[in-house]
Length: 323
DNA sequence: AATATAATCAACCGCAACGAC
DNA sequence: CGTCGTTGCGGTTGATTATAT
Image (cartoon, rainbow, N blue to C red):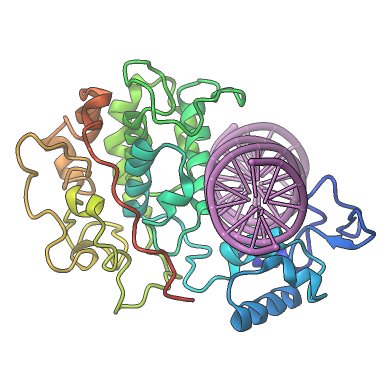
């Protein structure tokens, strides 16, 4: 995909980097920055294969690469680590998980990423950033000031509208996309938020038709995306059981996601919040049948109603299986 | 076809936590 | 107990690509 960026092509990505992509370090050591070359990747992969993903700084001290340990680690974590879903858009399920977890944890991208096999904190962060920009544009609301220290904190009250951190707004975007990460430039024509309500069903239909499965999803059949994540959150928060013939449903999701009945077979117990999307999310007809779908549902909920939920224990060591 | 705008992605930076000494 | 080096995280930037006008 854009891997070519790492090679030739674009010039230095750092304004502080010299023309040749190198930067002087204090001791006169030349420290290279900018896009990674394929040869550098090979060296880094070989290093990790031999020594494991640690002692990053020794890569430079040993003269293997003119890169900072920080840069090496980042390259490994974000691009070279096995089983990464590189070049693959977030599936509807992944989007939903990010939305729910962000509502719970705030901007704890690394933590959220542990729930998404093959995704890095950078992926999640970029995904969320894109959503925020889109929301801001749709709502004609400036993004929160960069000095806003609410970043990283849990969302504020849902009554403070428009609040871009509001989970219910996430629902808007989620449904705007038909639960799919499609470019939503068409939404720029929607004059105001009110018309979103009427536009959503049509958009869902339109976008659902365009949805495509993730062709590069590396998840092997023996290890569906989440089946090794018997995470309390994912268990407690029922995920939708989507019909296998749901339009645009990414393969690998649905029943296969939660073998052993992890998927909620029916409505959640009374009194328990249903953080999962309503099962008819991708069912276009259900939108008409049940106009009060997830967006309305979440809008009507007090923002603190999930406060009682215990933060889930640390997820299983992500990718620790590799090393 | 050219231009403008939005989306995506890779990589950097600063900061904080942690462990070794 | 303080210092230093390493690691990890979150925020940000800028280039590239895709789409709309």
